[in-house]
Image (cartoon, rainbow, N blue to C red; front, side, top):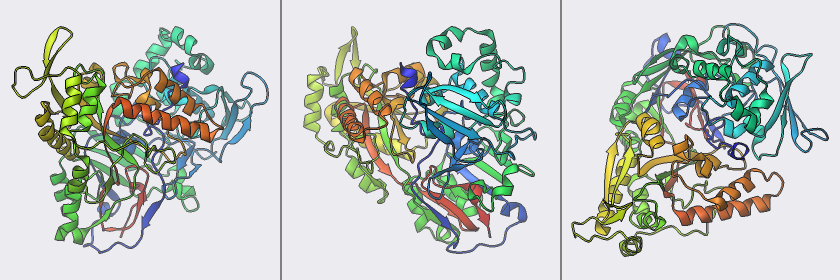
Length: 597
């Protein structure tokens, strides 16, 4: 029953990484005075444009960065300490154990929406809007990863005497259910379903996997899904509506995305006492700048106020630059993100784990970190954050060993019989050279450096490494679903939860070919069972930690990844601001808190 197993760490869907933050109030230097328009505008650099301003359908962190200011949730992580605090909800939920009835043994979460909360058109935010959003997520024709996070929900009941109060009943225990319910951004039903196509469909039927399959051909559900996912819903300002402080006013492809503060936004009245409602800039402009050299120049010229995800080289270069020192502040919060290379285990060249293991001995990650990261990263040996108590430190770090790699490749049947320097093998009746492609966006310094490092060593073992440059969206939308890749450089970020759920990335039901996030196409019955044991164990920490340890051992043995590192964020910020908010929530800053001098 995968739908109640595959809770999303996707961690990028609802929550973000948090430990503590640094609220800057004393910039190092000052700059010349700027216009009032500049003082009320923040310009943020992005290396890739958002795929959508649509929480349920967006699949990238760039989309999340933008839509998080437009759409809001019941609770939200405070960027200062990571605690979940009320936002659209009036207060923390009333949580009870269900003692009898259909959901006996589960829990009930009762929320009440703030009476002041309204949508952009002035209509009140209601419990029915939350219910509608959950129906949209569970609609079998809506393609979203969110459903895997929420399949523990048994029912949602609206208080007949209070349209802003509702209760969610859980049908099974999931280790992160409270976060999932609280942090899901939701939509106005009257604007996203004006024809009432979902009204007559019960949530319980949609949440029942067998009934949902039957409903897949329902004409109303199909029509809704088509409307909900229409192109204009993804980035057309007039079609995007949320309860947050900002509205989308412009989306210029490969250029910029503009958000403007709503007049008389309902949350402003709480900002003095509840900092989570802070929304200072009148305008936030996200400028798409994939080239770091260009971004550095724009930062120095004042065309950009913030640039995160800077390459170590450019970040360090700006820190050493005189103009950079005069005009910028540099921040490196420890945002827990694990970077690695996904190895496509379904690729004919990488289907044998001995080949994948050989690659781990052909890349000198210690050298890469020493030469390229300037002290901002550490090496890891598995996909869990090294600060977690269940991180398996007993697994040895692979070391460069060309002879060992050769022996593994020999055992796997890849031999350079024609002595042309590249090993070959007959696969499915066809001779194939061991030429492995790494696909990445053109300006990815990490992917370029990793490919160069691996290429030089792999050549000595008879493996040819080719770096293929392609835009991120094309790789995500075309190559990954089609399985047309060998290696892709990627990463996973982690939430402030005590528990990590890598189900989306490691469960066999989440294969990329089926639209999931398991890009390595990794997994077997045992690893699936361990993932399920982890996510459904809400009481026994020792047993859960043991399952985590065993899962890491299997992943290590199967080698679906080339592990790279866990590193800090690298952020350059204009020092024209009197106050900023630097956080361990990805991307490492909250631009809505910025106050110009």
